[in-house]
Length: 77
Image (tube, rainbow, N blue to C red; front, side, top):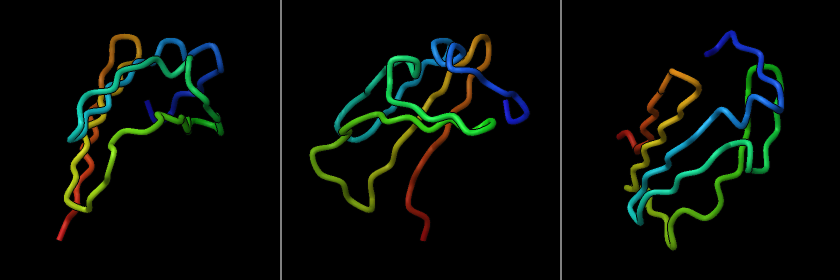
């Protein structure tokens, strides 16, 4: 998906799952506050945890059409 140029309308084809310590958040990027710059999409998920700790780990699943990517965020020592 790195070389793909997306339009505002394409955002409705992107679904996300954001999993953290306090649960799972799902949504459609087209319904979120977004910014597009080239092939970079910034989107606002909202509040995920009541409190955040450096040991927290997150898993983000991004689904676009028939493709899926998973990103894991965690502290590395």
